[in-house]
Structure formats: structure tokens, C-alpha cells
Length: 573
Image (cartoon, rainbow, N blue to C red):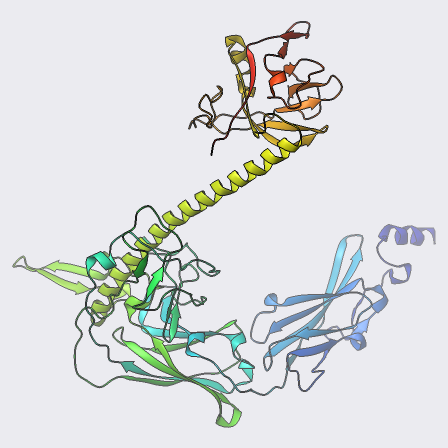
């Protein structure tokens, strides 16, 4: 009995009644009961496992495991449940098959022990509701080939967020058909308007989905997000030409946009976007090509529903998308979903020209030009590719210019904020009774010995707050020189950085003096200070002038020195 008692106390984590008895399921692979609590709400299921538990009093908690049918169990989402709960309501995608299992959690001397039940397959019953969408809800682009690392210009992608389609997986199928649009040639824009290198768009304001880490071949860019009739095009992640992005509030094709700021002298604040589409001639005649019908069926497990559509010659297409419930009942239709010209797809990063074009020489020495289809571009797409290459270069220039302007804007904003902070600090120091209301002081010396020994703690001190009912300051690396300004302006800025030790200038209440020390409020390590019983309300006030001392190196006694200066930096508007 004593041995049993000792072993029971050693376990520590389990009740005495659970010694030698593990919690689990009976039978071992029993499945939980899964049901749909409400016939009108197919987004919720109830999982219940009380009837399959063995030794439930020994459990310290449970996990409900949920994963989509057809996916590995390792992808399961875990929902923790306390030990006294034997059921849980889980949110699911309506009409999608999921597998449900329960995992027990039991603590023992060796850690945490778990056992998993069998899994139950369950799909809620729901109906497809009426679907009302607009063309701008869809994202139309080209397929990115993750294996070949090229954009496949023979396949377009039409994508929409699954949550924008009510009861998406309760549909029977989604169908897309399309018609090639015959494009008319446009006039090539003048160089001054299209490649001036003096402007950019503010399209990145408020955008959450853009990603600067975009690279194809040797080229990279931050592609513009532009609102267009029938589609929005953006590049949301590295290596994918077709990813979801929010519609920009920027200009439409042919319209003007106003910049959010200016960079120096600009020729105009109203600018148009580059227009390169259809500036090169195309083959004429022939019937417009038709696409589809192409169907995609649920379940839609991913957060984005994508339809892949075959297209030809980088042409523009107009698509019609229909949504069908079971028994071929149409519950929604969207027309005029537009695939624009390749030059008008800002998310398209064209491969380098050298990876697209090939040059060979015959016996006569004349060059023969060809197209490397491994680049994703074919001969029929060459006009569109050249236009897209120009448009891409233009957008890249816009991005560079925008970043420069944004840098200037941020710098100006920081400067304005610093000025406002300085004004607030000056007002606080004025109310504290300081004659020197500047938050910036300069600690310096004309003694070469002091400069050699203590030069690292001399320089610019900036107001930090109040201590012992007086202002205190901290040594800051602002690049200021160690001599006070004689013009009333801030000292000149130097570019050589230096390590800044922790050093404060504060009021020492005991001896009623201003001191420099490495620790705020402590007198250890103090080398310089004002005279005791100083009448100066603040350290750079007139009563403190020429009333500074230093501690001798041997006896550590205070000695007065007129070579030590604490001066007020005067700010002039």
C-alpha cells in the first residue's frame, strides 16, 4: 500500500482514481456525432463525443479537429475545449465536406498524453441563393507558371474572393464564356507626356495588398494598381501574376490624376497615365474568337475561386460568368468582365527582351530574329509584349519618382512634427520658470584637458521631462558641434557619427545643484556640476553662467572652472 501511495503522489498530475486508467474512446476508433443544429444555417455544425468517451474523469481537456475532405489530417484546425465540455459548435463553409475528430488531453508525470478518435465525414445541407455581383468584383489576369517561372500568355485567370459569392459551394457549377474584342489602333503618346520621368501616381495610398518583392528575370517593380472598366490588375505576392488586390482609387485610362504632393519644380500637377496599348499594328480581318463554355464545380476550399480560360494572341476578351444551382437553375450572371490589353495589366512583369528574342546568323551573315517561347511569349504576342515592356518601364519610373516624393513628404512631416514638439517643450519650460526655454542645451569646455578626458560626455543635451520638480536633459547625438551657436540658429550638422554614452543633466535636490551623471537622480559617476545652492531655475539660465565646477581626480573635491560652459541654443523661426 505504501508503494502504491508513493507512486500515486509521484504522478502528481492525475487524480488517484485515474492511476493506471487512461482516458480514451470506446471502441478505440469510435467517431464523434456530427449534426447540423439549424436547417436554415448551413454554416454551423455541432460535434458531440460524450457517448464514446472512456474514463472521462481522467481527461484534462479536449481538442476538436476539423479538416476539409480530401486534405491531409495534418492540415486540421484545432479547437480547444475544457474537460467539462463534451460538445462544440464549429463554423464551416456551407455545403463543403469536412472530417471531424476529437483528441483527448491527459497530463501525467512525463508530460501530455493524447489519443485521437476516428473521424466522421459530414457536409451541411444548404441552398444556393441569388448572386448579384459587378464586373469590378472580378480580377482578370494571366496564369503564372510556378514551375517554368513564366507568365503563360495562353491562359487567362478570372478570380473572385469566395466570400463574395453567397453559398459558393452550394452551387452546382460556375460557367464562363468569352468573346475576343477587336481593338482599334491608338495614337502613340508623345515622349513628353509618357516618359517625362517627372511624375508618379499616388496609387499606393491606402493599399494593403501591394508587395514590393516582385521579380521576374532581372526586372522588378512595384506595379501600379489602376481601376479599369471590367477588371482590376495587381501583383499581390512574389512570383504570381494573378493575385487579388483592392481596386485603386486612381485614374481611369485617359483621365488625369492629381499628385499627393510635389517634388521640386514640376511642369504640371495634372498627369495622365501611360497609354501604350494597341499602338503597334495588328493583323486585320477574321472572325472574333469564342471561348467556352468552361465550368468549375465546388467545393471551393481556398479563399479564392479561380477560373482558368484559354486565350490567344494576347488579345482583349469580354467574359460572361454565370452561376447555376442544382438542376441547372441560373441564380446569377455577370457580363463584361474584361481582360485588357497586355500593356494595360500593371501586374504583368514582362520578361527581359534578351530572354524573349533570339538572333541567329546564316551563311550570308544576315541576322535572323526569332521568339523564345520558353519565355511565355509567342510570335503572335510580340506587339503586345513590346507595348507591355514600354508600359512596365513607364510604371517603374513612376514608382521611383513616387518613392522620392514620398520620402520628401515624410521628411517634411517629421520636420513639422519636431517643430511642434519643440514648441510644446518650450512652453513647458516657460511654465517651469526657465529663462532659457529652449529644449536644446550645449555642454562644452575651452580646457584641452577636459576635452581630452571628458569630450565623450560633452555636446548636445535635449530636454526629456521633469525630475525633482525641475527639467532634466539627456546627451543626444544630433551631430551638433560642441560650441554654442553665435547666430541664434542651431549649430551646424556634422556627418560623422559617434557613440553616445548614457549621460544626464539633472537637479540634485540634496545639495541644490545641477549635475552631469550617468544615472538619473544618482550622484555616482558625477564629474561636473554647478555650484551648490545654485539660484538657477534651469541649467542654462544666467545665474548658472560661469558658476560650474569639476571634481578633482585625487580628493574628488569640487573645484570651480570658468572653462566649463552650459549654453542655451536659441531657435529662430
